[in-house]
Image (cartoon, rainbow, N blue to C red; front, side, top):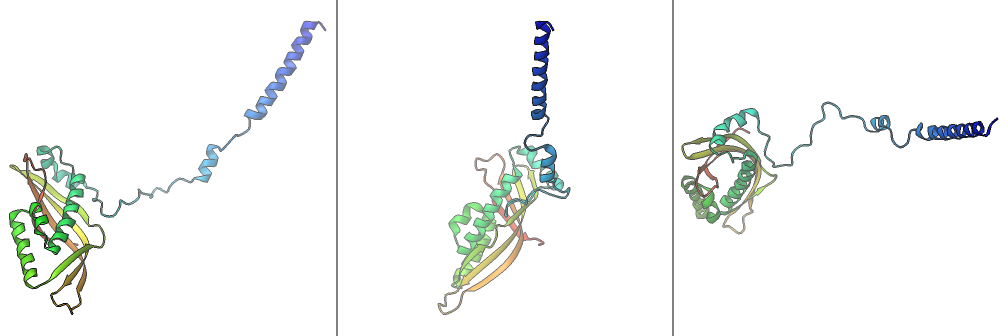
Length: 212
């Protein structure tokens, strides 16, 4: 056999050996395969849902509520209902604690004059009886935006609060035991503010009972 043909045969044998070795390596499954991952991590059932929001966070707004605030959004495009609810919930806790403590200085900038006068009467009556009160929230209150609108230069927003409170009342009689009451409270608070005013803060304009 001529030398040239011998070299061709040798190269062919070497190529066959290399291809066989490559097949042995590449033909095997290396690492985790998609079907193995599918077996190891079964898909979530169709009914699985996202985790619940942390306690006290504003409730998700439904289509009806979003439609009810369209008028306010048209007058005040910067109005953010979720951010507003966070602020309203903080104001709610501050006002409830301040009223129980008789803290007029904290209450005054957060209330309209009419509501402040009503709260002032309640605080004064409690002071006349010689009572002191402490209000505690057992859990962060739930806040739901019921309605928001704008009329002329005034914006109003109604928020439904659901809270669990512990009130501790101490009398002037040192020998008397403090009176402790735990209760669930559902109220509808109406906040308002003047559109275009330099002060963007909302104030409490009305409180009324709400269905639990």
